[in-house]
Amino acid sequence: MSGLLPIEPTASQAEVEAAVRDWIAEQVPKPWRDAAQRGGANEIRKVRSRADYLAWYPLYAASGLVVPNWPREYCGLGLPNRMVRVIEAELRPFNLGRLNALGLNLAAPALFAHGSEDQRLRFLPPIVRNEEKWCQLFSEPGAGSDLASLATRATRDGDEWILTGQKVWTTWALESDYGVILARTDADSPKRQGITYFLLHLHQPGVDIRPLKQMTGDVGEFNEVFLEGARVPDSQRVGAVGDGWKVANATLSGERQMVSGSGSGGVGRLGGGGIEAAVRAARENGAWADATVRQRLMRLYSEDRIRDLTNQRVRATIRAGRSPGPESSIGKVHQGSLNQHLQEAIVDLMGASAMAWPATDDGALPFAVHGFLRSRANTIEGGTTEVNKNIIGERVLGLPREPDPWHDRPWREVPRS
Image 1 (tube, rainbow, N blue to C red):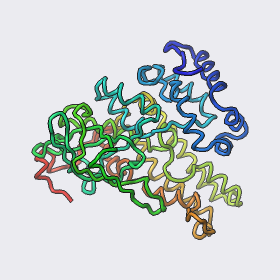
Image 2 (image 1 turned 180 degrees about the horizontal axis):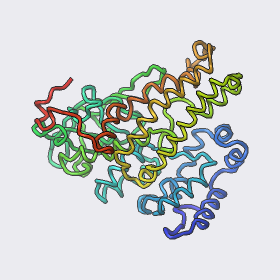
Image 3 (image 1 turned 30 degrees about the vertical axis):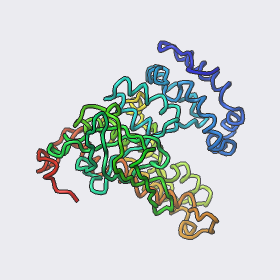
Image 4 (image 1 turned 120 degrees about the vertical axis):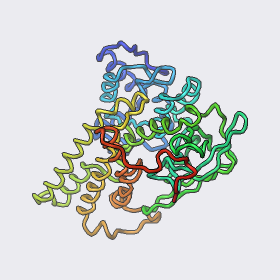
């Protein structure tokens, strides 16, 4: 069996389950299936390397199961959301993660909402197949939380645009082929009205990607990107000139949902293990006998379940390639503080071993310590907690907008850091 599964949009649940089970039996390697029966993800990782998964992934992408409710012309199956949940239940035991998370969760929603049909046909299938990897070029040294004040310029040159400026905190830029990018095309309009959204090819002159080192010791997850005369054809402009802020909101909502943790459907927990790891550590070192420890962990467990259920309510829109809207900020705010509290609990359970450990040749940190340090970014990345609380207040609860005396002034008059 190869290619898109022959499942009709009107197929019953039994028919969908049968088709997916047949595909699993034929296409998922037997050692992976056996490992899943023995012990799930932990056992699968023992028999399946990253290289193995990358080599096998084209079969997964070709089946349509990566994005089953996308239209078939974009490598989906065109199924309703209720059948997506059926498919996920069948696939879940085999830990088949979706690659190219930023392409699927950041670029695709903008293309579905605002792109042309030519753009969708050109870019969506390679995203699903993980043939072209994507990143997001939004934040700048002087435009983070106040993203709309960005200064990267795009100047029209015939059928192309010339980009000049600097971006920062660009996740996985070194691994990417394309990036969604915001650039200012009109300095005389208010800051949110003079921005345009482009799809930038990164492997070209005028694009300089420099990795940033984090306090975990990791290099390359985050990067700064310098643009000096990089070119992008007008055919890779998404939305109208000056309409980039509206287009960007589709990407930003997708990003917030992607980093919202358990049940988000994207990059689960950014930094450290889950509540199961904390409970396991407590049982192994005897701390579980302490009622105070149990209470702390059960409070975290309850919050983790709440996060999962909350995220499930907006997950279907991401699976369909659409922006989930401002409600994605709810999970983002919850995830940031919850994961930090969870990682703090895990290192507390480690005791002295979280402060000193045997050296390794590569200088790597223990997994739990790495997770604790990495989690400090959770309340900043994907929009700070403060920004997302404003979004919830204004766009979900209908509260008055945050006062902004520069809201309608030309961008060139707005003070910038």
